[in-house]
Image (cartoon, rainbow, N blue to C red; front, side, top):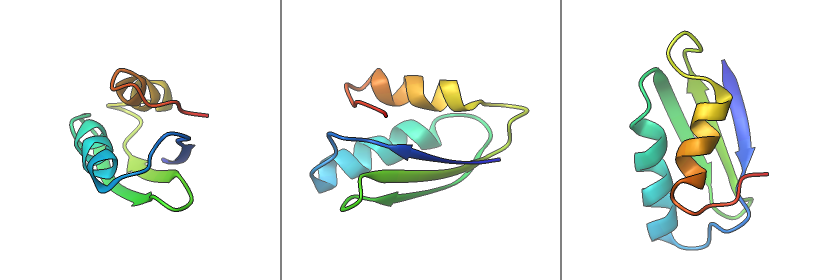
Amino acid sequence: MKSVLKICNMHTVEDVNKIRRAISNNEGVVACQINREKGEVSVVYDDYFVNNESLIQSLEDLGYAVL
């Protein structure tokens, strides 16, 4: 399964690193690509282990707004 999440308050390299760690900590995530300029996170994951809502929740727990 692949999802593209829009994050409106990702500005710095530190934000990118925090987001990458948060996404990678979810079991079942295969790949994660972050485009800071577009404010997009592309995630490839196994939906047997994790779903889109869990990914969004892990980012919102860090204080990021996901559209």
